[in-house]
Image 1 (cartoon, rainbow, N blue to C red):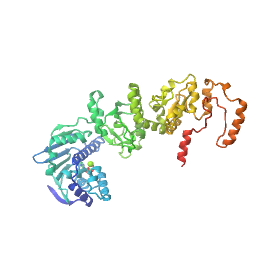
Image 2 (tube, helix red, strand yellow):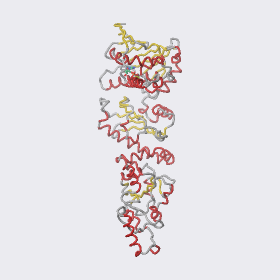
Image 3 (cartoon, rainbow, N blue to C red):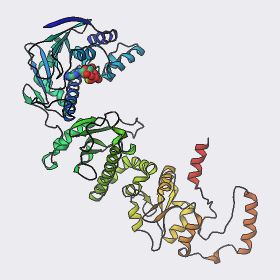
Image 4 (cartoon, rainbow, N blue to C red):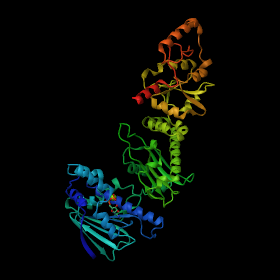
Length: 543
Ligand code: ADP
Ligand code: MG
């Protein structure tokens, strides 16, 4: 070794290492996930660098190899990623500069516990090696420097030296000398099980003692006829981090309006249902298999946040700044294309199996309604997959298209009524004339539903009308259709003085009193521009 020197860890790092070493942390196996994710990062950086012409393409396979040696009690992880120079090793492994570990130390300062309880929340990156090892050796070689060796027992200091004639062409090899009580991590079966659990999604081949473990790399690039159901399931499990099967899946490839290869999943259960917090995005953006951004929530509108999967877009310029990709006009175009495709998927699924869809809808309908309320661009398409109950059959969910098909001849509007979830909603006096005229009315459960439809305004040329307001339009549509028997009513001569009296009593709250031809059994209703549900909502906001 050349220029061998001993250096001390920075203070914070020492603190962290101290906790790691003392921890009797039960999830010791996380070290492997951390190291694998570093390998994957290093490989991504290398690939990116090659594709953008920053580094020369060489015949070194972009893969990860793991070797176990039970007799020596070691596990070694080798990647042909970007590698590190001596300075980088010192910066990266001698200091806590990185997000996860930094957060960990800050949290530790606020926490009086031993650190045991928070170690798992953060994942302490590279340092988690010391959970299982009492000595760690790193040999790394980048294209721009000599190979270097770093070794430490994870206490006060580390040793670093340059080495000549390393057998590593490029990349990093990490050897863990396992603590006696952690010798199980040098058993291939144990390592294999841990990898299956945490690292299947890594899009580079992982070899364990020479045998390839993961066949799932870049599954979205493969022809869909060649991907088995089991592979799709496994991919979903690794990406969504759940054993609960997905509901729908979309694997497609297109060139218009952009070159997209995507594998998207729609889950079967809504995790926000029980007031749980909103889930982080499980969408990852790639360009020609190069990860541009993981957890890329900008790929779909917020109301489609439940969709999980991978999107690969060849049209994104590779030199797109990883920080600034979201400013790109292309991103907006990509988002629009994906959004339309996801809605189209749901439209297709409705046609295939409406029962199955309705079941899914009962879990996820609110997301679609959120879209209707917030995103004008997709409202017409969304209306095809949103479901409503109507006065025709209060137990059946139907689409607006179904409603239009059941309209009476000459009906000009789509009518809705807000029931506010009341059981006796069907008995509302507002519904009376519609029943008589045999005109179906959509029953909305709450104010939000009304806001949604108000935003949309119309569908296929029909206006959405709340039967409580827009009295004139309603009257016009119902006009001739309501069979009104005037002989049974109160004579005109009595009604006029009565309505004058009522008006003086209720002024200024009531602007006008008219004799209704709409009602049959109910004596009176209050109508206005603003429906009662809207008034209730405004009153709430007003407080
Ligand atoms: P993080 O991955 O969150 O940055 P880690 O503690 O896991 O934190 O790693 C610290 C840094 O060490 C990484 O950011 C990276 O620069 C470097 N590093 C770790 N492992 C490797 C590797 N296999 N190849 C190249 N660089 C690595
Ligand atoms: Mg890491």
